[in-house]
Image 1: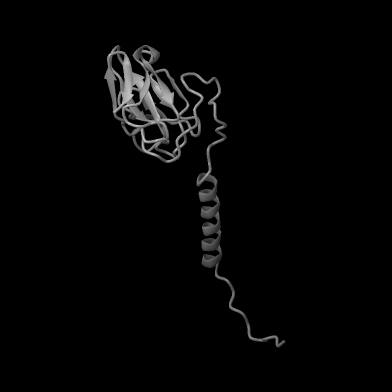
Image 2: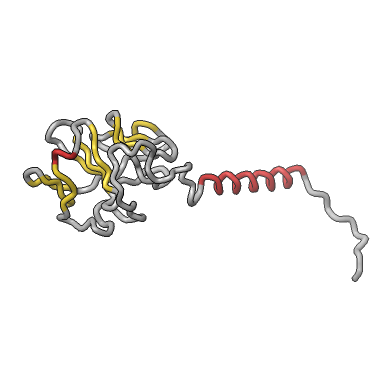
Length: 164
């Protein structure tokens, strides 16, 4: 093995700073990337306005297993005025902003796709990073969510709410 006596170029300050920046960026992305659920354990604490079904994985609202179009979700009397109910298995949240007006949205937060876990105080709430959405139109009421919850199609037939 031969050892070279030629001088090695010194690292410039710019190279060291750039390398440190890349490492810092990689660490930050890893902390906020895949699998970061902010400690979400599943029940959202008090369990208000939730059900016990399994969350749908990366499927559009209403297309999860058991969430076929036309499937009955609930009776209108089960959705509180000024509140709502989360249907994890079907991937939707149904709300009743005013008496007799029913809306539906995806149950996945637009920030990191965590499932929302409660509907309280006029908002649909995500436990992972604190995003809140309006029960009336799905608009963002508290960030970091970058956009509203996507609307889901439902129909009300008598006292039955169904996926459209």
